[in-house]
Length: 326
Image 1 (cartoon, rainbow, N blue to C red):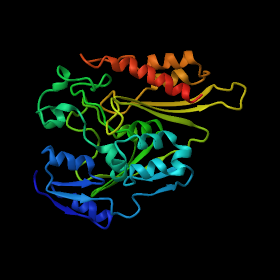
Image 2: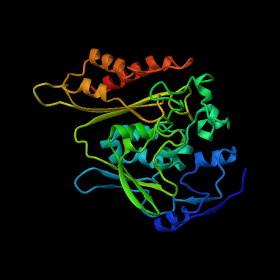
Image 3: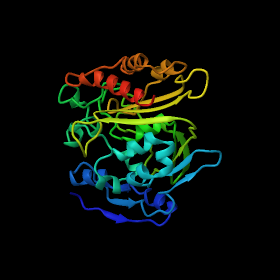
Image 4: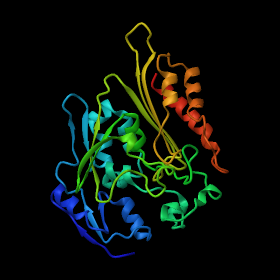
């Protein structure tokens, strides 16, 4: 393991200035980056710790409605916060499903969003696209957990649990760097391999995620469902983040007035399924409609040799998630 220096800046300005240097890397809880350093998959010269920065680990109301969530909040704190549990259950459930209690106690929201892929070949140091190579070994190799949607030329899947929830909530993400700051819809934060195979998000060198904004969702019901291959410390084989607004008091009780659905574990980015949302809006959510939505979610899926099971798994998981909200 390469030796590295460590610093804990006391202001956001000092942090972004430190990250201007080549070889500096931001770190929050550090569970992913430190593991990669230990396995010789990353070799920064200096780690810039962000968890000491004041105000980046809080949850507060936003003017005009909605909630502001600091990027350095731990996943445990996020999953337990009463406002998040009450108004944005999908995010609380997603944060509470990450890893183990020890990981959630240290890991941050920003770190969960920006972690590197967990493809077996990437984590074993194979010279794949993500390591600057010219091929994706999973395409013809061990691909049980790889992408069935949006893949190519790399077939990684995005490992974050909180990302699909935030995409379904139409969150905004705040990015700060030495050159300034910007807000983006979170759906524009992630990058497909077909757009740039070397990166998973739009962060430029030296930029960090400081906060996220959740819009108001009065009356919305939401749920995060995660399917995994073992009980703990693992990423989603398939996950669904569902946010619905159903008509409870009008002339058509049970009719869906608004739908937002994102899938995890199946694509290189959190996969928004707009066709399914259009299918649901204006209709009463019945078992038949839920089944049709599950089938529509995987239209166009392209399975590899060993992950065809994910197609039916996505359909069934989404069907059950939708019915759980009726």
